[in-house]
Image (cartoon, rainbow, N blue to C red; front, side):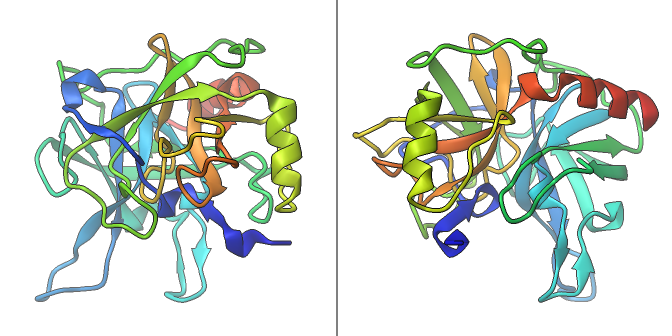
Length: 261
């Protein structure tokens, strides 16, 4: 496998994007991961993103919450995380929530990123306002036609190997024909299954999600249809971004949010 060339979205950003404010995308939250102790206190930094689905739940990507061999930490444990909602900036503002539970999909495959979805449970009800709102998710079995325009938003890096911006950004992408995406990623030994959709600017490049955007929303006409999952480089003109296909997981989301409150 050539996964050293595949960039998980938690290591990517909104490439070629534009600054925006949280009131334009109030459904998005920041997943803050615990860092090393500094000056005797715990520090947290934005690592992934999530999408609000109920007053107690967000959805994100499962690859954000895995065991890390370098630190020896199991990031599926809620003690390592907080959620920030209602802020345009990754370094402050909004409201912080502790996590009660993290439920990665039981079928997540860390080699191929199959079933790259997780439910995050916060420890108290989310208070809605103009900057914090529940999302609308695509219905089971529906699909968006190729070449349809979408928006992706997040705090990820603005270029490959670049620094993450403090302010929320967004960019425009287009749904890519599945067969085209499948054939192109075959050259990287990556498999595009029914739980994935592809979006980008084919043969143009420069617009994409990137490092730090993992778990953030892919939005079509106000409906969340995908979550930022992985890609080759960022904003590549041959390999589009790959997103978790939410229409494939509506039953799992409903079952999991009902089981974990």
